[in-house]
Length: 206
Image 1 (cartoon, rainbow, N blue to C red):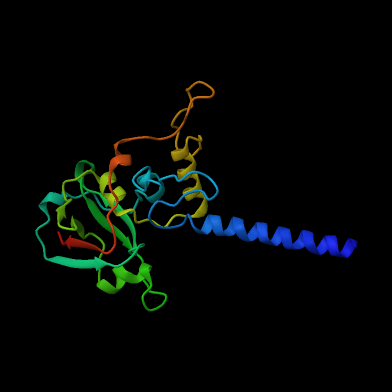
Image 2 (image 1 turned 120 degrees about the vertical axis):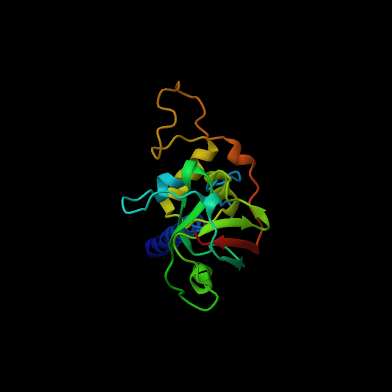
């Protein structure tokens, strides 16, 4: 009898661990994941993007994305993530410039290898998304539109908790507020529509 109870407990623990792992893995990438078992929560990639992804000391000075005049490259991304590891804003926080590209494709059709296979290079300016010129648009709005970021589990969960009104330490966004006040981050970014897949992006060289 004792052995039977021990076996049942082991199975229950294993199933619980599997569920936790699944919940975390689902928060890594793509299209506004939510905390399983709770209400749907939009992740909002545009929120705190630069806090998670730069800037870096080695980054070159910001460029005026509106002055890009080089050759253009049209790319259709079939699914997220695209394989652009990091974007940076142009002068005045406008536009988006490719800074890091995932330099490999793990298997045929690997989403994270799409940019690499298409030949996307650092310093290319994102010119348009599905025909809409974004070269002068606010950087965070562009990131929100693309919804394209590979997060580690801690960052993904932190952003979900913020959206649902739970205070986190990722950013000092309410230390002086009274106890019991909601800490959910809300902004105009919440109104930005995420582009559907497939998406046609045009990049332009400086």
